[in-house]
Image 1 (cartoon, rainbow, N blue to C red):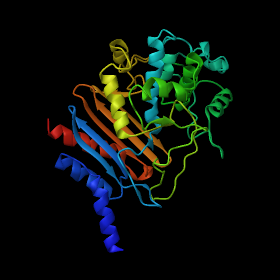
Image 2 (cartoon, rainbow, N blue to C red):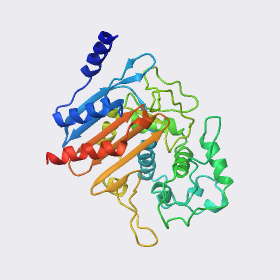
Image 3 (cartoon, one colour):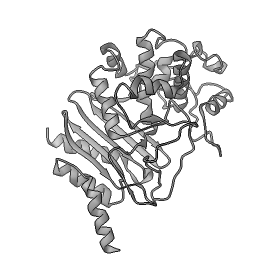
Length: 340
């Protein structure tokens, strides 16, 4: 057994590639402490610093993780949804200040004046379904819309404050379908994944037959931790570190959005009380950086982008509760900062 364990460890670390000792030490430390099982890509000023797969995509069969293993990225889907809305705006098919009700006729009466802009920056005042809507079945967009219709009204006047709201991004997903005439899944595939050659990315819905090489979800004790969501817009995308980096580069190089919309994407909204929020169109913005995390049963994801110098940190794991996302990010940011 000891010999087998040693062989597996050697195979595991063949996949380990970090050009900087500091990054190698950080990741090995997280891995050996049982805090990380997944893939990491770190690019500093356009140069690959770390490109690593550590652990197993399937603990039962001991199937090794690879750099092409797709993970559920959960809320890291939101930048894709925001980008898609902006593509439709570029084609003059909608405007950010249009009311969502112009495109979705069955929104509740209390939600008739919410704008697309307010949905994008989480200032709509809609009730978030997460942690409230519980079902033994897979929760879909239709379930969330039914949930919203049962609510007495907004939690606060639209535009008056920021409150992270998955429900709002589900409505954005519905708007994408209504305006484009395509399913959310097909539109994302045709307009983002295919043009950017994101070969290992896909939208997961009730009709999806997932590829055999996806990462299986586990909890902190390495027990299967299947999730119960089939919602689209707020989540639903599977991807890899390299595919997410292609998306990052496309945004930087204006391959998807024009320069005007690229600027708008990162502009923070001013609330009715005069204060500035910290969430723009699909991204948390701070000190010229854009960031988003994702979390759902068994999965955690993070993408952090320095907008000024082409630096990016991306990490995906299928042992969600074990991974301290923000501790990892701060550790890596400090490591990068020391080299500046």
